[in-house]
Length: 130
Image (cartoon, rainbow, N blue to C red; front, side, top):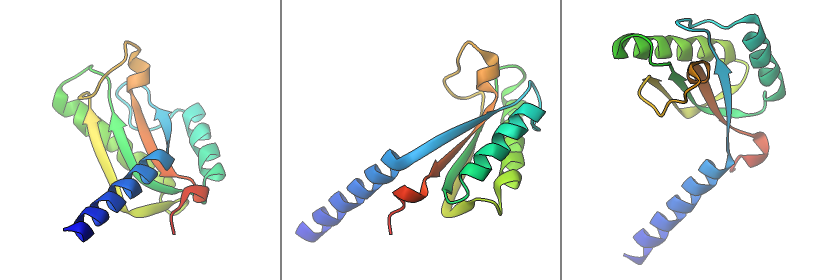
């Protein structure tokens, strides 16, 4: 019993460390688009060049509330796929990588443009646990 409790506490602490060390970068999209504007593509390429030693743990897609729930989920997934193709092979993707397409099912801001995004969650090299 004592060993299980100690192991559980260790896992909780490890989980806390990973969450604490996790960073986020957001890329924004035009309405009803799954490809990037020149400006956002430049921002993404700059981010990639600065984070080649990082590890991506998740890429999540979002959409504004325009359209149906289904069309927004599909659009959010297309955005995730687009960004994944851009970063794959340039930045390490962790083995336990996750992606979620929220569509419009998240806490939205009043600014629709801020809701049309993909969020990359990553860990900096300095925060890796060996």
